[in-house]
Image (cartoon, rainbow, N blue to C red):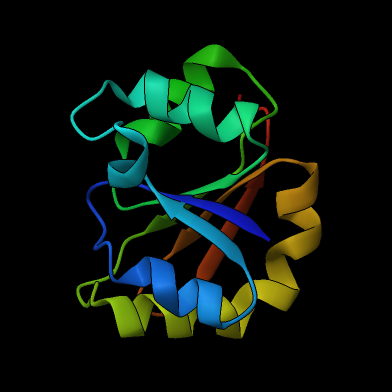
Length: 121
């Protein structure tokens, strides 16, 4: 799977996902750090990447836009260390891949996974 990692998540998450066989890039590597969230979403959509973030603004932006892409995974967890995020994502990827491929907003909390199909209404 192709991922774009938002600046609120560590750049150290990138090599963990690459080592697991995924194509992962961080916004820092593409001069998107500090850019508006809309620009980050546009990059994810243009490159057919799933955006990984902890920024709740992306859900609001997607709801306003009524777009069907890009898929976003939001981490709403206290422990956002790169190893923990990689473990949570990789352990649940089989369950959410089909939804992500069709366009989804996925939220990982401490004890559950919520999936909402895009466009958000």
